Structures are given as structure tokens and as C-alpha cells.
Image (cartoon, rainbow over all chains, first blue to last red; front, top):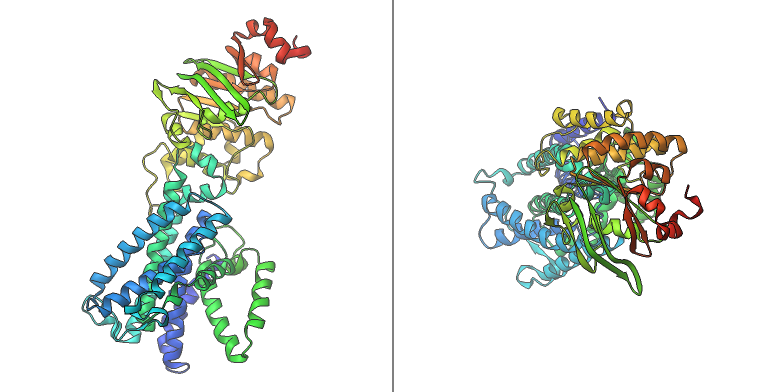
Length: 311
Length: 246
């Protein structure tokens, strides 16, 4: 078995065992930390479809997480707390937002694409800050979690935990299928040489926009899970720093490499946590570590595990 | 087949395409020659759709494609190669061609089935590679090919798209004498199946392949005719063939 797959299997096994491990060490704190890491992993995986496979460096991906979180928070507050309502509304809003902002952003490329996605991300951030009915700048505490199709699955941390883990696994498999499909092949080709792909008869724009929508929907679903896990929504979820974190996770984990984004997300959340218990000035250690990782590991963590490029 | 009707294009004060009319007939190879800076590349860009002409029309198979974006022209059956080698370096040789085949095999908005092992697509791609003696390179990354092989791969990609006409932009560029001669042989076979608009500097290749030759100078077509007529045309000689003429 290839290194990254093996590592991923071990990680998934460890994740599945976390609620049990937490009884001996870490308790509910460990569970919520790992939930947060998995949710960020889902968002980072979706961003890797854009950065790693399509060559689209979006600096506004946290906006989609924010959209998912706010849709959830607002619907719970307004008395429509069932996922059967929350999920379709979230997907519809994320799709609409991705179509409009994607269609505009994709008129540019390179650095301009980064800047314009950042601008749209900030637009979402400020919109959320101005929602004074829902906490404005301060954010909004949710008094209950969403109702998982009437099952009460989210009432316990364990139920929510395994829902997040299952989502993570499904998203991992789904994205792998997409990357290897006809669609994914066009996307990967357009990353290398869009002119050539156009001259073969493909509308590169249409494929990239579709990828942008798919990634946006997955990130919004991560946002739904995030609102339930933290029982709190705030504009910070959609802030540009969050988008930056997601990019770092993708790059550190290994762009376009199997499970890279997941490795990156887990590594960063755990490093942050581990270092911050050691010293108050943990960023002094964290920063240089990132620099060294990027300089000396070609292809990030996943690149260390298997040198071959994923297809 | 393909007709350019009174194409005109300015870059500021520079008149790069000056009332150019040109046609490609079914079954023929029409060569476009001209000195550097004559506007050949600009013309190619207008035909393939990366540049819009200021005025004039481009007709392909009887329909007006002047306003269509490049990918729609490719769908309409206009295949092309590039002056500067344009392939997908990270893909294998097979995958380069398979992507072009895929464009002709139904929608590519299919998200879940793995395409790498699609036998229909791969078999057709292998057939195209065989035409250009690239079969044993199929599993190599395209970036590992020699320059000459990359030029062949470009042609394989163009053919895999099942074109009705081919636009070849200096296929011999950067090739040695021997390689050019081999490629000329290959193009002679291709010529039987596809009408070709050929832009080329290599005069040996042009006179071996072309049924008709047009000479472009300062954005204008100064002569069109059979290779012999063009060779004899004083204007064409002065402008381009110069002392190189036999």
C-alpha cells in the first residue's frame, strides 16, 4: 500500500478511536479539538481541489465556511433547526454565491484571482459583521444544535463526532473520484496549459467554475458542522485569516497530493495546540517551522510519504 | 472548407492584417509563407480564435465562426498545433492524447467514474500515438520527450480531436534537417485525410507538401498559386524567397 494511504488509514483509525481515548486523556476537550481539526480538514480538502488540482489559489475560501455556519446559526435561531431544511438552504446559497463570485473571479488569473477572491471573502465577512440581529461583530451563541433529521444525533458529542468523521471520509473519497474522473482530468490539464485545453475543445472557464461551486458547497457543509460543534457563530469564521489558514494547510500538507490537505489540517491544529501549551509565544516556534517545512519538504507532508504525483 | 474573407486587424497604427482573403479547399494543403513580422502568427491567432479581427469574416464548413471562442472552433472541427510546443507536461504521453479523444466522446461533465482506465478512450489514443511512432513512449511523462517527439505529440493530440481541418503553425520549428524530412513524410500521409493550412519557414517542406502557396508580406497576401507559380512570381521572390530561391 502506498505511504499516504497507509498513513491516512492509521489517522482515520485514530480519529475513530478518539472518543474512547478521550475517556483516559483529554476528555471532552480532546473530542472538541479533534472535531475542529476534522472540520478544517474537510474545508482544506475542498480548497485543495481548487489549489492543488485546478491551480486556482482562492484566498476567500473561509467565506463558504462562514456561509454554512451562518445559515445554520440563523435557521436554528429562527426556529428551523432541522438539517432537512438547513442543508438544502446552505447548498443553494453556497452554489449561488460560488456561481456569481466565481464567474467574476475567473475572468482573472494568478495574483489577480487571489486578490479578487480575497475581496469577495471580505465582503462576506463584513456582511456578517453587520447582521446586528445575529450578534454583529460579537457573533451569536446558539442555544441548541441542529436536529439531524429528527434523530437527535447531534445531541451528544459522540453523535456529532462520528457524523463529522463520516463526512470527512465521504468527502475524501468523493474528491478522489472527482479528481480521477473525466471532469478532473480536464481540470488538471487546464492547470498545466489552459490554452492547449481550450484548443482541444473544452471551455476551461466552465470546468473551473464547476470546480469552484463543488469546493464551495463542501466548504459550506464544513461550516454547518462547525456551527454545530462550536455552538457559536461569528464573522471570524469567514475572516481572511481563516482563508489563509486553509491555504497553509493545503500547502503544508502537500498540494494536489493524496490526503495532503487532511494531513495539513491535522498537523496545524495539533501543532498550534501543542506549542501553545508549551509557551505563550508559540508563534515564534510555529512560524519558522512552517518556513522550514515549505523549504525542505517538496510536496509537503504527503510529499514526504510518497514522492510520486497523484493522479 | 475554411475561408477568410477580407480580414483586417490593427495593433494601434500597425496594420498587421490587411484585407486578407484566403481559402482552404477540401483535400488540399495550403501553405502560408512570409518573412518574420509579416503577420502570420497574428493571422493564425485570428483563425483559432485567440484574437478577434477588427473586420472581416472567418467561415468554416459554411458557417460563420468569426465570433466563436477557441474551444467552440475546436468543437466545430478545427484542429491546431502551436508554434511553440504546447503539451501537458505533467501528464503521460497517453493521457495527453486521451484528453483530446475524450473531448469527442460525449460530455466531460462526468464526475465519478475513473477515466484513466477507460478502454475506449485509451485504445483510440493509442491508435493516434501509433500514427506518429510514439507507442513505446505512451507511459512516459510528456515532459521527458525529446523536442522532436514533443512536436509529434502535438500532432497526435490534434488528430485525436478528430478535426475536419488542421491548422499547423510551424510544425518543423526547432527541428534538425533529418527530423524535418521524416516529419514531411508523416505530413504527406496526413494530407490524404485532412485539409491542412500550413505555416512554415522550411521551404523544402513547403514545396514538398503544399498544393497552393500564399505569400504574406506586411499583413497583405501578395501572391497565391501553385508552388511553381509562386516561385516564379517576382513580387513573392523579392519579398521572401530572395536569394534562397532555387
